[in-house]
Image (cartoon, rainbow, N blue to C red; front, side, top):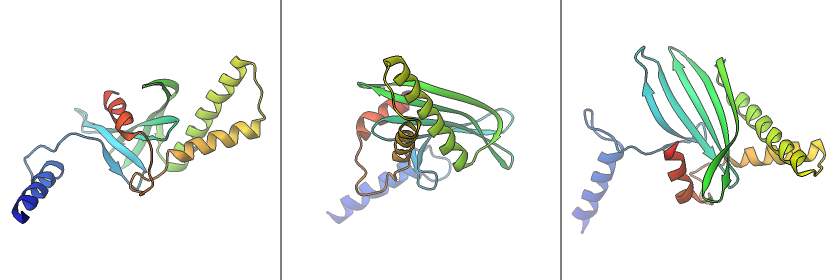
Length: 168
């Protein structure tokens, strides 16, 4: 029984961390430092690297498109998606040109985008909320996206969300 367990474990590690020359199984990778899944990385013909970072909570998905040029990391765009039953719907998008990526910038932009979306929906519905209430709600929603996937109490619909992310 021990040799079977050892073979299963070795095979699993060879798939997620293969030796040089072998292809890794393609799946989103959790980056604990950035609190997001990394996927869709590629290298352009000019040698620049690009990747997509995805973080989510039970209400929204935030997608960052990031470029690595020499020693600099730039943010190319931020997209905010909302759940619509079983699929994601784009609700806000911002493109950037030569903007250095920083965690504080991403959080602030995400809060602003969610706040703008909420204010727009409130206006269309003819409802009213104070600016402080909207700001507080937007911050709370975005903070939910920064919860660690490695926490033992991480409780979202991951099995339903990851297929949506992989389609993007």
